[in-house]
Length: 167
Image (cartoon, rainbow, N blue to C red; front, top):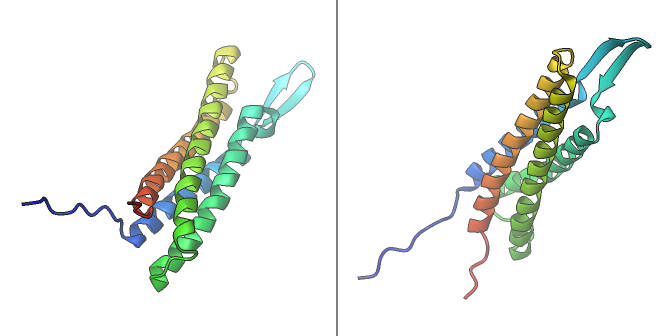
């Protein structure tokens, strides 16, 4: 007797929830890193440090913005699927979902990794606790981006279940 077939489809509302969680993590990460500033006193006066002073933090912002745009688009598609029961675009969009989710998840991972690396390098160079609040806030933003990556990776797995079966 043959084993029962394995069903690996995920209910559409679960995919929608994962996409909404991805968007929320990325939105909070964006808000945290954009509002992160620090003013320090030097011999030449006060210097205000912002995220845009560092390339790695700018890269984090870029990955988060692209990730939010893609996730917002996919969330709209997921809402349409949940409400109507029909998938927009047919079989071609399943491939778009799969490859898009893969790309975005890895893109978010590189943004978080670059930010973590930059923060660690700055902590070693600083030597004092003068910038620790700025760096800890940057780490928080990178952590939220990493959490967004995890949700995007789960979404990528879910989208692989929906790929058309080729025989």
